[in-house]
Image (tube, rainbow, N blue to C red; front, side, top):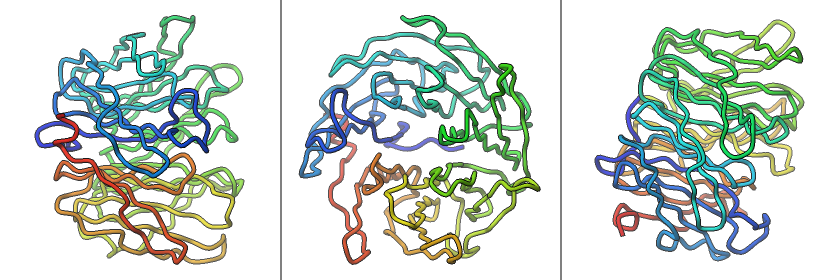
Length: 347
């Protein structure tokens, strides 16, 4: 799995609510970006006019190597970061103050990604690594006492991506690996974990994302080294596959993101590729077919895509050190509304 690039640095992004804000607040959106220094994380706030200001705050995470992932929890009160130094760090977030809370260990290789479970399950955090392991941590006491509650060592190669299912389905975690398999971990009432898996691309899987629970079905999308995004649906006979267009992308798919439900009867997925494009896939209903439009051809491979909490904004990070924000108009077309460059992060 390649690093998400700001020059020689890694870049990750994901929307969260600014602490104390509501969904309608004019300054509610917080966008964490990994800065040009390996251990520095910068936060940008989006105002009501969707303008990207200079970083409100930069956080020295004290990681000893590159950061690959930065994720805010459901309430944006905790921040987790993952690094090549083989650790996960957790911070308390109070306004513009980020206080170290815990350093979590257990991986034997670079940690690619972290993911928070829904708060109904407590403070539960998962991480995946080049060492092929997925670790699940739970905070057992307030103030930073964490315990590894499960170690999943099924995969034979790097686990590149993890994603928790909507809480409606229980505590489920999907794990996508370079060995071509996707495994599903499910927490049981007796506090044990059950694991199932299915074979995806034999060339390797780079990304996984769950669909919203609005359909009542367990569905997820994967993207891999066969240049294809696939929809997987869980039924009585296990997981069944529906491949999206085989020739839509001409190189590896680096990231996939299923948009949150907006209340409308349609599905929307973003796919990011090494071929320098992002495509938006939509389907009007359960019986309709998937179609796609190209969002844009970028100047460099596209590493990461992330939807806002309300599903109406898409953030895109690419290897030319830029992050752009896109919004769909009433006519269905997409337009770039703002961007942040490497220079903005450095400054």
